[in-house]
Image 1: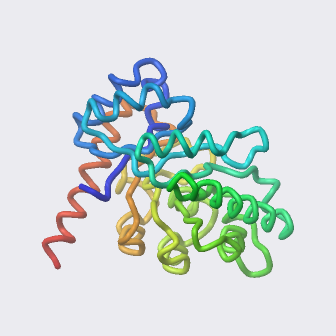
Image 2: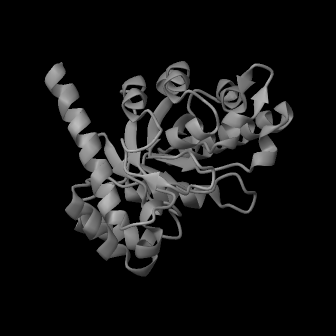
Image 3: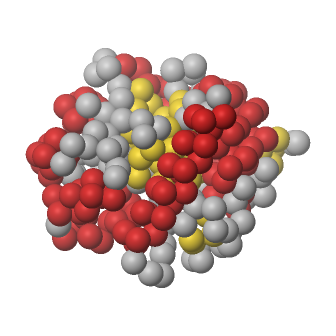
Amino acid sequence: MSKLSVQLYSVRDAFAHDPAGTLARLAGLGFTQVEPYGVRENLAALRTALPAHGLTAPTAHAQLLDQRIDQPAVFAAAAELGIGIVIDPMVEPARWQDPADIAATAAALNDAAKVAAAHGVTVGYHNHFWELQSRIADRTAFEVLAEQLDPAVVLEVDTYWATAGGAEAPALLRRLGDRVRALHVKDGDLATDGSGQVPAGQGRVPVLEVLAAAPQALRVIEFDRYDGDIFTALGASLAFLRDHEEQDGEGQ
């Protein structure tokens, strides 16, 4: 189970109402790792509730590139919580059309990585669909970014958004290689508004091929939207991934 986690954004409404109770429910489903968002904003709740429920947070999302962000404070909070990788969740679509804007984003992530290193933390970036829809010559804007990143900066590939953006996610993962340290694993009809998402293995994302293409990566289950009970859906995705990991282990 060491490679399975869950993005707390999936349960954002429940978490905002009752952080400790929400983490208890996730632990009850069988999760041992979570991916928080808003590290500084949720520091107090996470500081006590994570260890109380036997949970760790190897990765987290936090806005890093806005000039108003106090990066040292974000990384200090992450270090306090034992978070090793802090991932910027998005750069707006308009910033992925011009090579100069992509270069500026790469430079900003590289600069943030230097600040993070002083706290023993690594910086990452998480994609949406627009980084894959945008093409610079014959390459995706996401890959143009990747080649300009310092080796210290890692990637979390959201395989649903990559697929929705027109990429063949397994091939993309193979091209990006070991820089991919985490995956967002989710499934659905590939609507770019997040509607129609379903538990892993029940939609149009080639989930098993995705997992095989990035065996080194942490698998972070996420839903942007879900029409039914989100905890039931998370449990179904967890069971699907757990069964896959067990089958892989038996085959080795």
